[in-house]
Length: 152
Image (tube, rainbow, N blue to C red; front, top):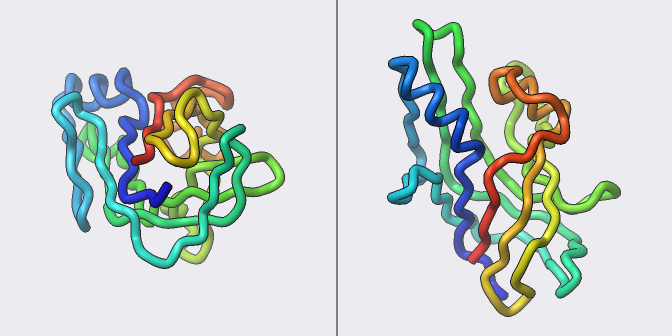
C-alpha cells in the first residue's frame, strides 16, 4: 500500500478540554481537520516506511502539517510539527519535533495494528509514551490510550 495520508485525533478528550476551556486548536502547513475533529496529514514523498500484514514495520515517513493546542492564556501550549512514523526496536511509533529541543525528535505514541494490511487502509491503536506525555500537555501517563490512527 502506498500511504498518502494519516488521520489521527491525538486524544478526543484532550481536544474537548482545550476547546471547552476557551482555548484553540489550529492547523497549519498542510494539516486539516476531519468532520469528527481528527487531524488529516498528507504524506511527504521520499519515505521508506513498509508495514507488513502482521503490523511489523521498517523504515520511516513524514507528514505535512503542524497542530497547535493552546489554552489558559498560553499556559497550555503544545505544538506537534514534523509529524512522522518511524519503525524501531520498540515497533512503530509516531514522532514529532520536540518543542524545546529544536534539533531533536521524540516518540509521542506507540502504535499497534488493529485492522487492515499492507494493501488496505490500516488502523492502529495508539498509546502515549513518556516523551509524548511531556509533549502533549503533561496530562496523560505513559500507556494511556490515545485516539486510533488511520493510514490510507
